[in-house]
Length: 241
Image (tube, rainbow, N blue to C red; front, side, top):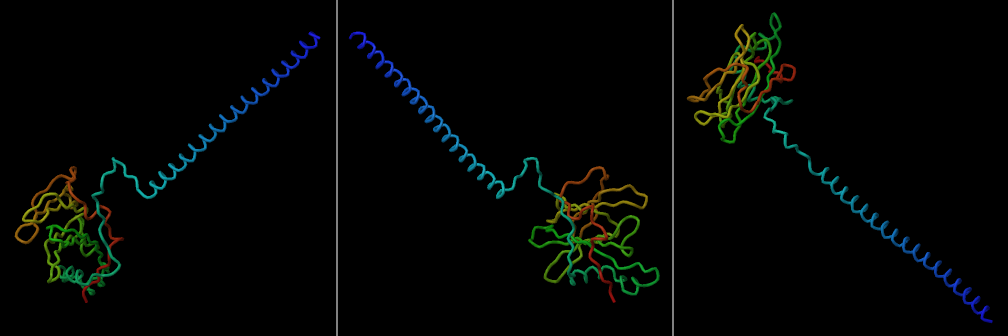
């Protein structure tokens, strides 16, 4: 009887131990599964947050242009041309060259019509632009360059501030001034003379030559007529009839 009881006890105990072991294993498995679920949930949440941040960064990158700290503001300004003629300005240009007529342009040799490029900039701070006009073509050019004009614009139209028969681009508005007008530099070369930068200053209502400097040193300032100014991109100047 004792043997049966002990046997039954051992059997019961073994069954309990087996069941306990299975329950413990199941609990452990459930715990691992729960832990894995928690880890997976954390990873999914982090991924969603990362994607959201990436979308915000990408949106900001689209909306806000990136500027490098090493990127300096450009100082060069190309000459301005227009498809529509400025009749008042062209009349002022032709007034400086009375012999630029249709019969001369179309006469023997057929030198052809001239072209011009313009650059507008406020030289005296009055809110009104002065106008540089660079004339190109056989009539206005020689071996040393082409003709450069400078006009002011007021209620009475255009007034001539400078007429320089031989000049090359660039034209640079300097950081210095005289009598309330900014100085400007232009390049001159050809004719056997070494290339130089020539500075002009305002004096008594006109611009006059003030100094020259070797071409190796480019003057500081704003380039208003660039070195790429050429005949092919100029506006045709119709001659007087």
